[in-house]
Length: 139
Image 1 (tube, rainbow, N blue to C red):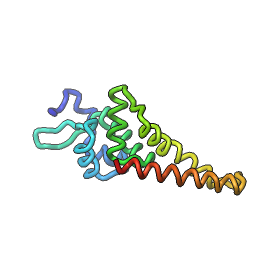
Image 2: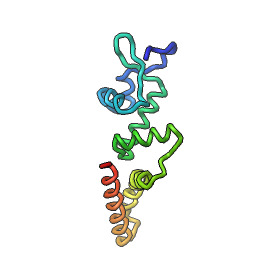
Image 3: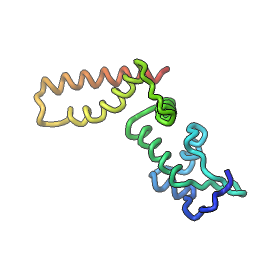
Image 4: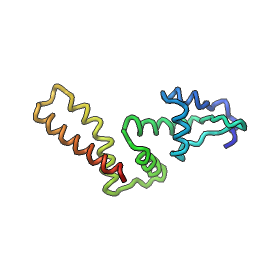
């Protein structure tokens, strides 16, 4: 894409990567995997990211690093989000449960405030969720 007229608001790949705490090669890789990340390129081939593109990168970073989505799962999620047609199939429900619910549950399991038998049951449920998430990610 050619550079837009308001190019002063653009960030270089180094600036965008630093803002996300990543290395530039990861952003270049994500460009090949996510259609949501399409930086502007100068005549010399330098990449420049708009604020919207940086927002997309933040969302991808969140899905991959904080919610533990696979790249394929993040692609599917973002495509469904963009199309406004969330997947209502059985797998979608399980992926959401495994990816979104597992993180808060894991934090609670380590709490000293819970009875030991409840912690044991929650650990069992967490293991089941992780197993289901692993099975789904194979598809």
